[in-house]
Length: 90
Image 1: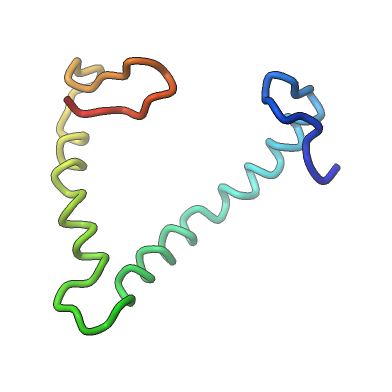
Image 2: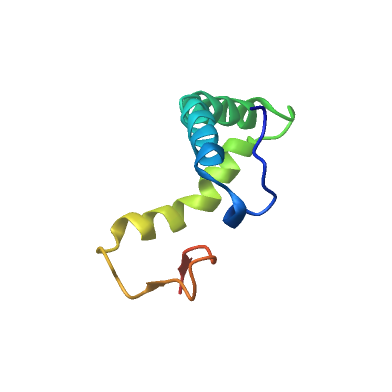
């Protein structure tokens, strides 16, 4: 099998999902390497600027990350209106 038989996930069968699981497990093994490469690429791109894209990204996301890690589990300030929406800080 080279690809699943379905176009909508609800139509997948056991063989489809076993096939996907195998590929997803293999894909996750490279997550750390892909993340580190992305960070290095941000730090080495577009010469001539005083601030790298990595530094700008860290400066932008640091306040959001600190809020997430400072929260208590199930803090009502973090809500999802439905399961398809990303987690939002309100």
